[in-house]
Image (spheres, rainbow, N blue to C red):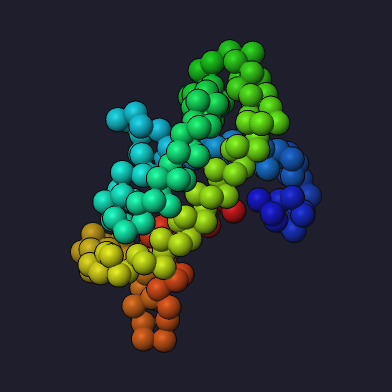
Length: 175
């Protein structure tokens, strides 16, 4: 996102899209994913359940971020369902969902939740290979250890590396 904001990412001269179009697309996808991670619906991936199981010593900071995310979930849920992934809604519903994210208090709450979620995930990365020592072996067993999303897990297992760069809980997409 920073590359798009700073126009460090250059578009081809004949691109039918502008930097603003790409920023909007990335933001839309991000908010849709964020809504899905914080949605308790059984069809969604509720990020906090596995975090509580994997990191029982971190229950307090996890629950603080959970409450913060849940406080702004309704507006995220509306956005996801009307704009991000389920765009079956009328254009008026899409506009209403986008405007709801822009209300000052909502925006501040959402931005705070996003930042705190990212900080939490960054902190949990530091403990990842301690609490999930079998992770590298399981990735190899499933045949996905070569996947770019897990490149840092393999690096962390090398003697000269640090486990701090693991991608299992990486928030690279949140930046």
